[in-house]
Length: 204
Image 1 (cartoon, rainbow, N blue to C red):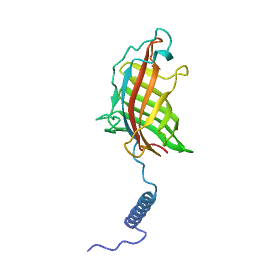
Image 2 (image 1 turned 180 degrees about the horizontal axis):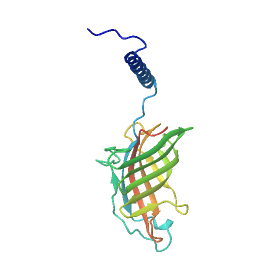
Image 3 (image 1 turned 180 degrees about the vertical axis):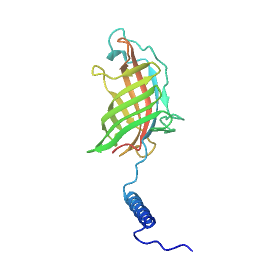
Image 4 (image 1 turned 45 degrees about the vertical axis):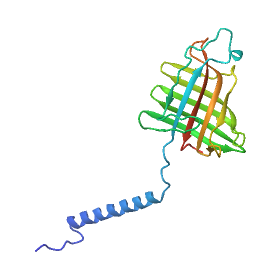
């Protein structure tokens, strides 16, 4: 027959300690369950095309050394008519950072989508959901080259997409961009760049 434990015995003290730890764990779990849920990871995609630049906005002698390239991220890649697939931040070597928030009657959009050596950065502070238009700064990197906006070049044009309601709201955007010229790593290398991008689950 097993004898009853006394409160002062080592065995009873061990049981009391285990019960206390269990109570603490349960309280902690309850508190965690009541806290804000972890927001979903940012996700996005893009499709870009390099082309002959607008020669009126680049220095004499400038030309596109990578015309006709079509870098992108996401499967399938987005188009003007289909928002395509997405890559998720932190998965499959992908990084997505973005903010889409309302500022008065317009939206501020800033984001980057990167997977491996291919990436796109877009920044705009004046996206109008009524006209669907805004100006933007764009940077594109792929393979061993990159094309970036600078202050001597005109801004890129950003156009919000969507067959019905314009697809821009706090936390997400689907839009196309067109840049008359971006400068490459070589001083005389200028390419026009156009494309489509999607950003979701962004900071607001």
